[in-house]
Length: 297
Ligand code: ATP
Ligand code: MG
Image (cartoon, rainbow, N blue to C red):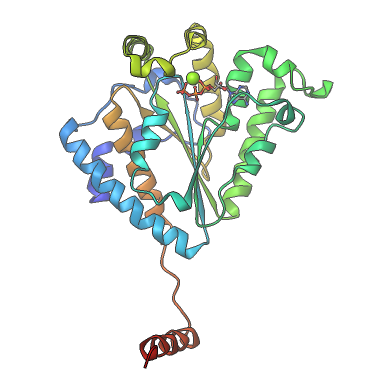
C-alpha cells in the first residue's frame, strides 16, 4: 500500500481528535467514505493486512515496543468484525484480544485500572482491547448504579469524578507510551439509523440471533446520554501521546480500511527493524552450520 497517497485520500485530519479540542459528534459523519469505492477499498485492505503482518514480525523480533489497540463503540458498530478483518494476517502468537465485560466481583474490589494492567501486551506483542477502561467514563457515567457498586471513598463521589478519571487515564497512557507501549484508540462511529438496521438484521438472521440481546435496545434508548459522555471523553482524553481516532462506521469496508491504515502508519513511524546480530554471534552461527553439515559424516 502506498501509505502516503492512501492516507491523504482517507483525509486523516478529519478523523483524529486534536488535543484539548472540544468535540461535537455532529461534526463527524458516520457515512463518510472519502472517494473510495467498496471494491477498491477491499483490495487495498488486503494489501494493508499483508503489510501489517510484515511489521508485526519486526515488532516481535525487535521486542522493544508493544502496541495496544483500543476499540470503543456503541453496539453493532462493528468492533468484532473490524478486529477480525484488520488482524486477519497477524501471527496469533504475538497478539492477544481482551473483551472487557461488566466487572466481576473480584474486579470491583480493585481500582478500575487493575484489570487493564493485567491485560497489557508484553513487548513485541499486539494487545487488543475490545472495550476498555474507557467504559469507566461511558457506561458507568450513563448508569449511575454502576458507579454506586464501586465502593469508592466519599471524597471521590460527585461530578468531579469524571474530570479526575480523565486525568488518571491520560497519566496512565502517558506512562505506557513512555515505557514503549504504543497506545492507539479507535471509536467506531455508527449512526443511530445504521445501528437499527444492524439490530434488525441480527433479529432476522438466525445465524446472527446470538449477537442480539434485548438489553442492547435498552442501551440504545440512552443514545443521547452516551453521545454526550463520548463527546466529553474525546474532549479530555485525546492527547499528543494517545489521540482518539473517530472512524466512520456506517460502511464496514471503509471502517476496516481506515483502521488498518492508521495502524500501518503508526507501525511505520516506529522505524522497526530486525535485531542485527553481533560478530561473535554470527561466528557461532557459522560454527553451527559446519556442525550440521558434518552430521553423519
Ligand atoms: P457484542 O458486539 O458481541 O455485543 P459487546 O462488547 O457489546 O459485544 P457484551 O457482552 O454484549 O459485549 O457487553 C459487554 C458489556 O459490558 C457492555 O454493555 C459494556 O458496557 C459492559 N462493560 C464493559 N466494561 C465495563 C465496566 N468497566 N463497567 C461496567 N460495564 C462494563
Ligand atoms: Mg453487546
